[in-house]
Image (cartoon, rainbow, N blue to C red; front, side):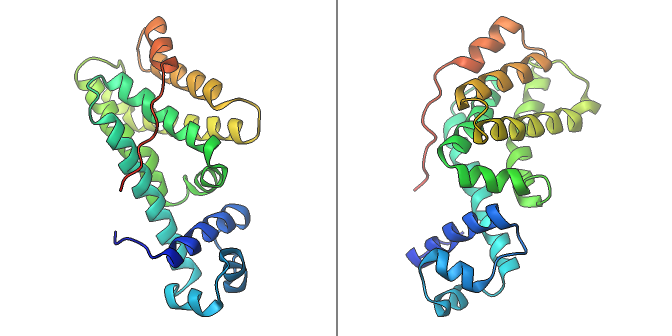
Length: 204
């Protein structure tokens, strides 16, 4: 995607907040302009329809998170560590950026691009882990496994955003239970789920 102008970034950030709060179909141009701190004419210059803006915001969010996770895990060989880091990155970011977390939680299962954010990298890593004997499940169970991972991550994000768990608690618990469900021994799953998590890289 092409780099955004400062005005576009302000519009996208405002749209993210409003969509997370109100939904995808209840945001007006007037509200968007007010939230972004720009004139309506600026909104009309960059935004054809609210529906198109929603799709663009979702695509940007998905591409950004995918790039940032790949920058961390590409150097890791162990499928268990790759999956553990990916899960915890999502949960920690929901703590650090609650509006990002609220947007993803609200739309991830109903919007294709966002669903791919949760599914695509996890699917590749889980398949690789299965092929090298790291995980223990039947090939025909793959869709159920990926659905379990995605729904568990979203549930943990909500626990964090609602204040029921810290991101470390929710991230470690969720990661450990998923790894154990995939066949990793309990002691090793605990180590993978509780190790130091590096910063989530920011792409240029």
